[in-house]
Image: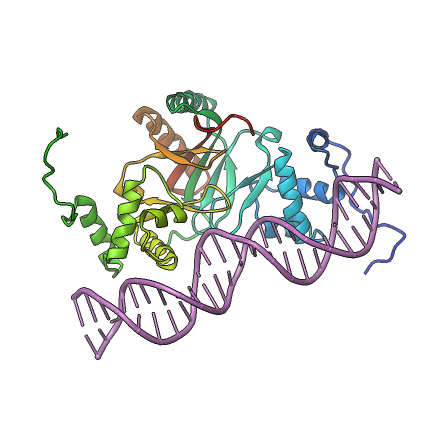
Length: 161
Length: 161
DNA sequence: TTGCTTGCAAATGATTTGCACTGCT
DNA sequence: AGCAGTGCAAATCATTTGCAAGCAA
């Protein structure tokens, strides 16, 4: 639709932020470039206040083809930039890898499926960490991470059911 | 419980166990019958020591057709007998509804995908419950349940990747 | 009978992938 | 040049569903 030539770059590729540098670094270690499509994905994930589905992502980055989105999410997951979380059977949700953000958990509305981040008091986290270490050890396993989901009916949803 | 000796129960397991009664009751409330196929599913889920995939289930109940397994799992989930948990993108895992068992969590091997149940000390659970209630309240939401997954590399899997 | 169940096969739909083309480096 | 990246369309595959036949109340 748009002719070649004058490129429309209304949105400045926001000066390389700290996040961008880390992402660039991680991608390079996997011989991946930080292309505009991947920047769009990272920007969208950062803009969201929780994990989002692919349709959500495409809404935030309308020019991004679906297959490219899926492909790059998979590659970036491999590179430790993106994390995929599966809460329901329909769509997976994507967010920035935890190491690029803060340790957090998810509050999921069982009615509308929306997902919101939350954090636990440091003290509680420490208690949990100790418990997990103990559990894993007794099973002869090594913990790599943990995930805590809080299922709720959110304020926007009628408490039907 | 009992020492070695003569089993007092014939091979044919007919007796309605406590679990069976509860299941029957829940199914009836949803106008569902506790058929042999559904019994086979419940028996398989009880036999497993953690949530299992559909192929696992079919291995434990070889005569059960796939579509019947899926259909009845969905119906029994609706009736509060079965719980579906999704950890990966490939297969969902199924287990008996928590109210029919004990409150527990899952330790998942990232390498081989096996899932094992574990429980947290009651004290830790109480701490968590309080924290969750607080979190949900502040968000204007109502907690319905929570889920804790511990990701590990199990003892049977090489720590490589 | 009535209608819940079943099993087969076909449909569905999120995700993946083959292939030819683009565009960095 | 050379090869990673892209986009379209077709392929995958777990899961769902339509339909005709079976069985329990």
